[in-house]
Length: 82
Image 1 (cartoon, rainbow, N blue to C red):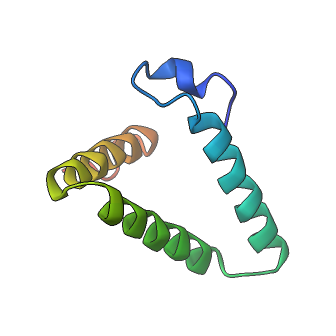
Image 2 (spheres, one colour; image 1 turned 60 degrees about the vertical axis):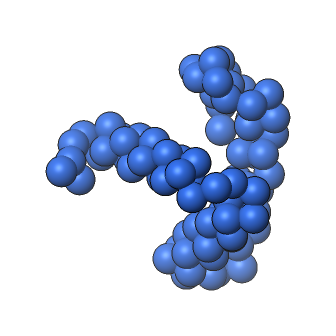
């Protein structure tokens, strides 16, 4: 994750870049262990959803997911656009 990622979104927490770097290292480690990319992504998503469920209400989780889907749509060039 770029160092300036926090500056792209003024609402982003100050430690977002650090958390992203830790996740990147975990992904690097798992790919080095020859784990299936889908397994890695599924485990990360499942862990993320579990963390959100323990720390946020349903409405806040839905907003996080909507934001994530919007980001994917922008990156994918609208391929997934509804």
